[in-house]
Length: 599
Image (cartoon, rainbow, N blue to C red; front, side):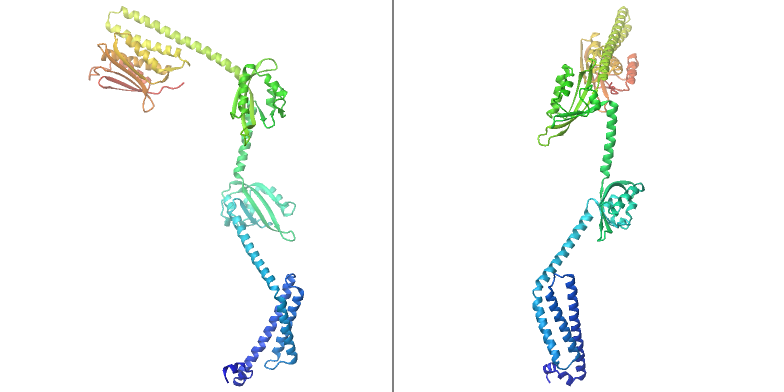
């Protein structure tokens, strides 16, 4: 028997291998039973599907498919009961019926395939959309600039937290997962916060909004604004809490600083007796506070917006002194036209008792039109400066009296020194001893230096300081004119420097001694040149230099032991100076002095 006949012959396998025949029969029975059970399972699955989605398959088709699967299952069960034998007439009829129902079910079900495909496609789209939405939510949650927290509503245990909130408190997100949210608050804030939270849990409130301090990891507070809502199930039971927490610490500090500044400003306004007013150019109105109104003696009522061109303000302007109105009108115009952001004016006003009082006004533009840049709102203050003005008048009178007296003192001291100089000169004329006469001539130069200081102060503007240049010019010129020194020339190089009495006296005497020494020792023949300079030194002090073009100092000439040298050393010490001398080729004396104090 060939292989093909053996495979197709119903008795071929049994004839050759009886044991195989039994095995094949068992496999047939098992396969028929499994196919039948599969048909029943398919029918059960179809019934379950149609109960969930009644719109998925029409009922007649469901019934047809159900009948086909049941009849097919019955056919398979009957085939399993008669393995290896020809089917009976009933079995054949059932098989034929199953075949017809299967064909009819397939034909009826085929139009449903596109619908099922569309449903599956919609499901896939929904899953992809859900995945994208979940990714967007995760990204939004994790990368949000504000804090976000998911928590269990009843226990307040944190389930998820984003980096913004964790870092705001000095933690990493994983550090806060599992933490009770109330542990991040301060105890003194718990009572009010828990009451508000309870209203959210009970449904009395739909949202929980609160500004409160949270406790950082280091224990310091940070202010935040929390907005929380609750997700509930179908029965209204809270299942999750979602909170957005915004860091408002800087804003809170700014608000506290603003309130403190406002309190200080109010205190300053009250203590300084300042009135405040404002102008709305858009409406053409102005309003004064109580104190500003009081400074108009009730001419302009307080806390009422009044037209700028109304009788109230016109009556107030009429009280201003006629001589002061042009200045006031110019300042008002500058603000109205926006030429200046801030202006200040001071003028006299007629009091109810008829006397003139002084008032000071400050105006500042605080708002401008964004299109035209024209001022739209102006704030200002008004102060009664009558007492200050009277005090200034009295002070000016006192200063004028003081200046007059001081000039008189300088004048009298100068005159007295001139009398002393005259007496010394008369005495010198009576002397026959050249040494004594020379000594009195030196004394006259010193007295002249003292008198010249008083003369310069008397002629100065502030009676306290004067310029050093003209002083030294006149001082040295007087020394030269006082003897037979017509052939001696003077080079003076002095930078502008304001000096006071305490600096000018020793400096004048010092220059007198140095120039006198140069004339006496270096220019004995009455010819030569003297150079005097005074300028700032590199170290910020003052450098005084007196030089001549004589032969210079000879070693061991005995210089430095006379009265003039002693006086020079004392004066240098009085001025906190340092003196050096050198030959170049004449004698050059350089003295570094402290900078004169400004008064």
